[in-house]
Length: 537
Image (tube, rainbow, N blue to C red; front, side):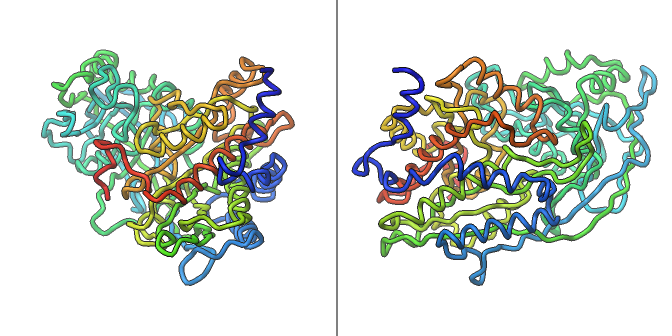
């Protein structure tokens, strides 16, 4: 079949008897997604930075749309919003990174060589001739018989750590599929648990999944946190550095970075003191601010199952106004994630138009501060508006297909729960295929809001644009690849005339059917036995 004919057939959908969404999925259109995306990513909203006017405008717009569609307020006390208390901390380097060892002394420049972000709300933080220790992957995983720390005392020291987990052995750490152990956030958390003064994560494009310019954009800007717990372990300074800077730090202690990384591949690895002392100082400006999650609900129709809830999440925040690139300082976040919120809105409207309401209750959650560490969804998962045990699934939308229709659709977290099997069945009925994440080494399952629901035991699904494009496949794949390299977390993430949202429509219609199937089936979704989240309930 000619690609255009196949696309038309896919857009036509299936019959009502085969698909519970068939009566309303035609309301999901490219125009509807484009219109909401255009507004949310406009310069008027100034990049939707946390706690800004753009944040407030976004929330007002989303709540208005929910109300217009006929959703009920899903927030506490009958409101549309769940207030999220946030700390804003802006770090300024007052004494740049200096290192000294047997191989000499050197200074490093921020943000070209390294970045420095506060790890707690103290007014000042510093490393004063702190010892630098290479800790490999910085992982303690008893179930894998893996311990990079070997009981060494790391209090007050700075840890140089790789941004990854072991990938060579398929029987260790899921092979190429990165687990949470491989996320940079885990590295800082583990350093704090060890009493370290700080941690420096070594950036490589391969391990991060994005170029160093994305890390640079975070330096010197205000970062956001949920309020710190009284006994919460923290580190003074969280840092990244370039691979070249890491190599130089090792050289100053007479060590070779490549040799150290090779040593770190085995279970017998132990921390390596580099014989290098580090100094660095920052001043922190701390303020309290408020944002909110916007919640709209559609109550279920089944007398018993309506007590259970299926959540749909999409984050509405982006990076606000920051360092200008090519004269533009507004980080509009059109794809990431105005497009995801727009798609969630179209799905919410479709569900509100169903001839008969779904059996379980649906909660649509536009969450805040995802770009700041998944804070809005963390707050919602920790303070849910329904009992945690009543939340049966989360479908998350973070970026959509702007490149055109595909025959496939990637499932991030493929095989982790029986939501995978459901998605495969729905895709097959539509002449499409669900495939595993093409880049499992990037750990995408731990990088968006569904992760916080998985952490409380809720099976989660996150679909990602496929690669088997129906029209000009090589050109479309090249354009898709260029997004991360060029536009991700940059002011250039804006709507463009070439956007083709027909792929987003197809993906949203498939997601709608999965959502309704999940709501209507008698049995709630279950984790795959043995999955890392299977015991969280």
